Length: 458
Image 1: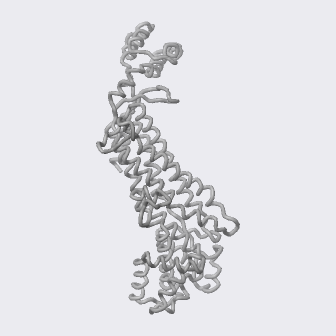
Image 2 (image 1 turned 45 degrees about the vertical axis):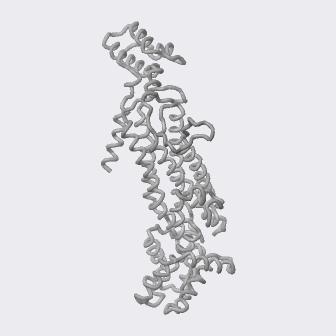
Image 3 (image 1 turned 30 degrees about the horizontal axis):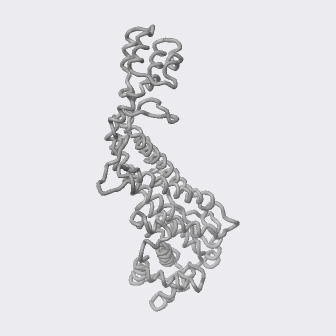
């Protein structure tokens, strides 16, 4: 595109810088190129493994590999021109390859291009390969940047006390580092699931039975051939299919990505709230503007941008889960157009990951504000006080504390007065007086440190 201001989608316009790395996997050029490469790999395999095609010379192998490796935008335009006649994208690819072989020593192999296959054999392998490579080279590195920023916050603020809220109400103290450790641990687990996922693909003909291949060349073990061919591409063969691959395996990946994104939405919303409440602040960049009219504003736009893009991505990922497992009889074509949006779902995810990583890098704790919040809510130690009294055998500790704290704010002084009047041993009273919102954080620091230690051992 000559000008990204003409882009229909923000992924190819406003967010091009963040998403252009996905073009090499999900653009129309990439989809055409990958299917050309699969067809060439298949032709070579018919010689090397099935022995249906004569042995190829080193020069011929180099020529075929060069055709795959040097596939260009001009080549893709030629295929698109052929498609205007065929109205079939894979047939246009077949015709392109046959024409390229015609004036070479490989002209006798033209009839073996796309031999015994259905279009979906090339299509599904290309899509699975794109998902795999985009995951490894684009999605996981972007997710890792978010994880790195979270880990940095855990390290810096593992012992920094702050007020925790349940149901939006002051509950008990925690530390900011421990709260970030929760998100880190959740996202790290999903990253593990994403990275270990094995994408399935199929190569077995028109309705999945190797019909044409078995009829034309029954001497070949086509099941073994298919398994070997797909595994060589770093994919997992699925041998029991209709004309299309059952997409259950891909949907598992998309569902994991959906969960990953949902966790990030929760992270973005929580950080946004901490910023709104004043517990956090953002590093100020002098050249930036927070409002066209209010010069004081430092807006949490990275977290808002992340939340919005994660929602768009998840709406597409949800559609994949609804649509892709369902196909009428042995196949219909409604999955094909849906598959062409994979780049959009991953693109909006990628924009969100970049925004979230950038926002987390600029986050700083306002320790004075956190201390102030804790000092304003001495009732948050009531949980510890009533538990200590119960251990000491004091009856109705919960009810007594409920009467002086529920829906009320108390101060250190009023708490001390209540403690002084308790009919318990002085040793118990000393423990009660030692309670403080700034120190009543349980094992929060130790739990955050546990995550840090686990990371150091990885």
